[in-house]
Each structure stands twice: as C-alpha cells, then as structure tokens.
Length: 105
Image 1 (tube, helix red, strand yellow):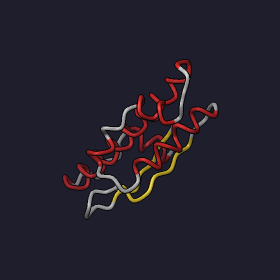
Image 2 (tube, rainbow, N blue to C red):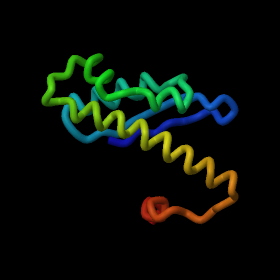
Image 3 (cartoon, helix red, strand yellow):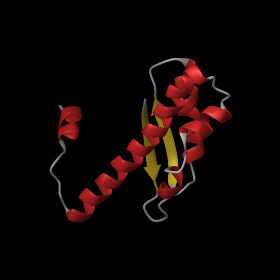
Image 4 (tube, rainbow, N blue to C red):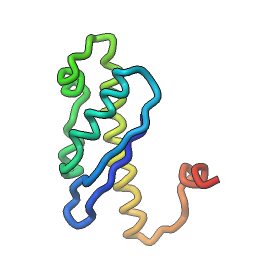
C-alpha cells in the first residue's frame, strides 16, 4: 500500500491524495477511505486517524483489521516523507536518499 499526498505549502493542508494498493478488496477500500479522509486536513490532524476508525467505518470483521492498519501506516509514512523532504529543502541538502537513488535508477 502506497499513499501519496499533495500539500499546500502555504496552509499546510493536504490538497490531494492518491494510492496504489495490491491486495484484496478490504485493502483497496481502506486505501480509498484514507485518501478521502486526509483531503483538506492539516498534517497534524491526519496523524490522529486510527485504523480502528477505518475498520469501523467500513464494517470490517476482525480478520480484516490488518488492512486498516496498513492504511494508518501509509498515512503516517506519507506525512513523514513529506516532512523529511521539507526539512531537506530548508537545509539545502540536495543529496538524494538511498530510497530516492533506488527509485531514480
């Protein structure tokens, strides 16, 4: 599960979000609801979204809770990635991270 966010630098709000998920329908539904819930919210606000809220909203049975956990983790990872890139911009560090080097290879 991969979640990408577009953030308005002046307001700190998430303008858009999209996902790529390989897996079952529950994983796709979790990703989809995550993108809807993060749009228009501040970065700090989306970090409060919990997998239990996603699972409850989608009426998941206990066996499918791992899919909502993946969505929560994807939200946190997207925010962390955005913040890391902003820090890199501010410090003027143009050195690509190992992950970015792998993607660009």
